[in-house]
Image: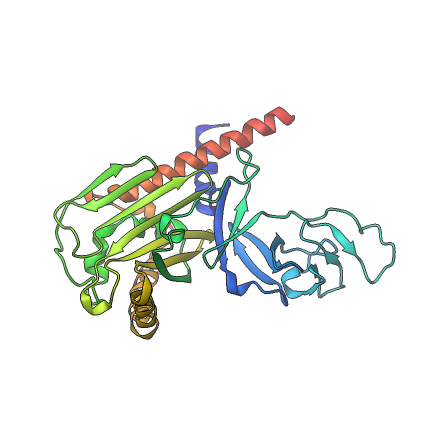
Length: 347
């Protein structure tokens, strides 16, 4: 294989999304025991539902009979039935019944790929296996989601842009004082600075050199086997209620090459009565402000051309952007090399 062909395969993998990872695909409340729920992630259509025990199951959204979407179907005693001809499949992808034809040869056959699912902190994570990691590693989550002293809310949004641009945006603290200059808190701080990047045991941190605690001043990315997420702080004045800084936990899931879904947990470290006060204030007032900021990001990124990276001219502030791109490219290269080696071994 030529170097050009290898580069193209790597670029395609980065664009469509890395395998061997847990990706959030939906909110927990969206998956019910009464109706299936269809999603798309990493270019694949999936169907999720709750079985008789309330456990979430996930299959490719494809009826083994003739390909109709199972997400249009119904749930039968914890299994999923196709609306088109009634074929019933279980959570492992095995055909259980073909009601229209007794003793059909399809019954008992594993016909569909099933996916591992974890439900955690109001989100549903699906594992997309790779040659390197066919079995899922432990789902690693930020400490704020497992520490009882933290509380918050999960928000999701579908953006019509490649997920790479969403990650670039998160790795770029300097955009805050410009794009969000009219927001509740991000209007403050200097519009001129330098950036520094520090590598950590689990990833990297990008931050402004001359400013601390005034705006969106830093982002930290953690990269684990099977998961990548980031977190950042938004300084809050006393008018925003108890709890100190407002921490954002971010996951970005590729949907396809032109669409992604962002998952942001909005967290504060607060307990007792102050915790309830914050949660009330958030729903009553703060949530609207946060959605306004998120929409500014979405509109800006959706306005960028798909091939913006080919013409861009980066400068010193883009240290974080360059670093996240290196991480994605190296991971994609490793995956492609493993797939090619496995293919050669099988021939």
